[in-house]
Amino acid sequence: MNNIKRTEILFLYDVQNGNPNGDPTDENKPRIDEQSKLNIVTDVRLKRTVRDYMFNYLGYNQDGVKDIFVRQTYVNDDPKQGLNDGKKRAEKYKNDLNKILSACIDIRLFGGVIPLEETSETSTESAQANKSTKGKKEKSSITFTGPVQFKMGHSLHKVERMYIKGTGAFASQPGAKQQTFREEYILPYSFIAFYGIINENAAEKTNLTKEDIEVLKDALWNGTKQLITRSKMEHNPRMLLMLEHKESNYFIGELDKHIKLVTDLRDEQIRNITDFKLDMSELKKIIDNMGENKPEIYLQKDPNLVLTGWD
Image 1: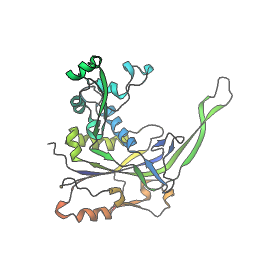
Image 2 (image 1 turned 180 degrees about the vertical axis):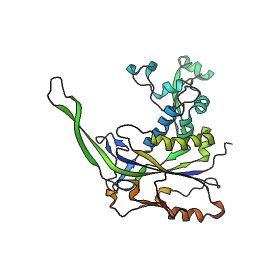
Image 3 (image 1 turned 135 degrees about the vertical axis):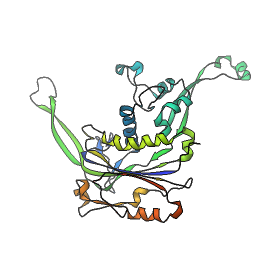
Image 4 (image 1 turned 90 degrees about the vertical axis):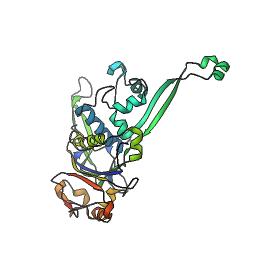
C-alpha cells in the first residue's frame, strides 16, 4: 500500500502581457472560448511546466535512475539526426515496465502510453504451422492511467487579445533595405484556475508515492515561476489548495466552480492581482458542512492575493 488518499487540487496562477498557451492551428493566438470569452489553457501545457521544472531544476534527467519519460530526445543524441519516438525511450529501459515506473516520476504521476517491442515465442502448435513466426518482434504498448489528472484550465474572468506588431532584427533577404515585421497576440492579463484530482486507485498501479506528490507541489509552484521565455514572462503562482479526503473515492468536484473573482472593474480591464479579490466563501461552506469528514487542507498562497470568506 502506498497510503495515497483521494486528493483534490486547485491551482491558480496569472500572467501579464503574455501568451499562456498558444493555439498552433490559429496563428499561435492565446486560446479563448469564443462564447464565454474565457482564456483556455490545456492540461498538456501545465504538465509540460511540471516536467520541464523537474528535468531542469530537480535532477530528473538521469536515464534509468531519476528521469522524465515524456521529453524530447534525439537519435544517437544528435539533434541533426532528428527526434526519437516513444519506442526508443522505452528501449532505454529494455522495455522493462518496472524500471520505467521506478525511474520516471512523470509516468507515476500522469501515466502514459508506453510503446514496447517484444520478441514473441510462439507455441509449439503455432510454430509447427508457421515456423517463420518464431522469434519475430511484435509491436505492442501498455497504457498507465495517471493518478494525477487536470481539467482544462480557464481564466476566472473574461479576457481580450491584444495584437502587437513590430520590426524584426533581420532583413527578409540579403540586400533588402527594410527589416522584417513580427506580429503576435498576447493577453494583457489572465488569472487562471486549474482543477485536478489525485486518484488513489490509479496510484496503486503506477507506484505513486507521497514523496512524488511533494515534488509535484514544488513543480507546480516553482515551475510556473521558471517559465522565463519571451511569451511566458510574468507567470506567477498565486494559490495552491489541496484537499486530502478521509473517505476513499470521495471528492467534492469542480473546486474551480466554487470560487469567484470579485472586482469593480469590467473583466477585460483587469491588469493586476491587486484589481480584484477572490471569494472563497462557497467552497469554505462546503468544506465546513462535511463535519467529521472534513479533509486535510494544504494551502500555499501568494501574499498579494486577497481571499475573502476563507478565514
